[in-house]
Image (cartoon, rainbow, N blue to C red; front, side, top):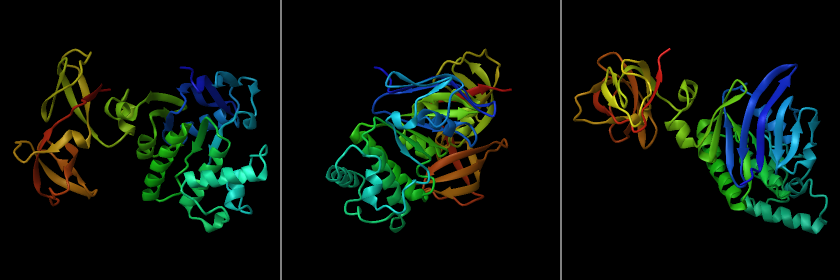
Length: 348
């Protein structure tokens, strides 16, 4: 299947300094992808280059199999037939919601434009809001209007730049789920830039982890979490601790917590010094276990409690307990290691 968007080894520069380097990715029709990374890693520059707002100094960007950007050539943004949803919504304050949604639909009659706006406002859950102005709406409602406007031109691909960053945590999660459902229902592909891991994992069919202008890993959320390609991704994604260990056999590692069996064959010879990543869900509550840890800190998360635990050998681990196992700080609790996807990297 031909990719809707294909990026081949692009480089983008600011004042001769490369901020995006040898970056490649592809997005198929109807797929939702997220670029995730720390501030300054180049993810917004990639989005702007796809939109046509930034030139590329090397490589090529193809939309629907046709070159949109290469060195010395940039197809204007208005000819790329892409939808855009910005961080600040970019609504026109002097226009009501209907006119904001219709903006850009110049080849339609007024009646057709209003019908389009009414239909899309129903799609995004804002039926009856067409006569209101942006200042009369909440942040979440303004974001829905921005999405409706992006959908109005019936694009095959929508670009979203930190679209929920101005919203509170609960609204971000709820609106993110709604936006994903809308895009899937409409069959529209999307590429979203975010620095929020939960947001990227909740929305994306595929996620690209960026560092220093490059994509380090382009994979499903599950694979990125359970099978990080290197120490940077493992450290950047989720919570966890690294324990020193030594390879014992091709599928087991010896640590201060005992021998931990792996679910993959390690290529390093026995005796290799490694670091083992333990996520909170790898350390499970087991009152009958001889391995016990002292509770240093606890964070209540509703259905679960995240404990920071000190083990007898001085190792600190994180563990998620069901919230009805409510231990006080200073108490001891039994735990066992249940790492279904054991991740390790050579030390040094």
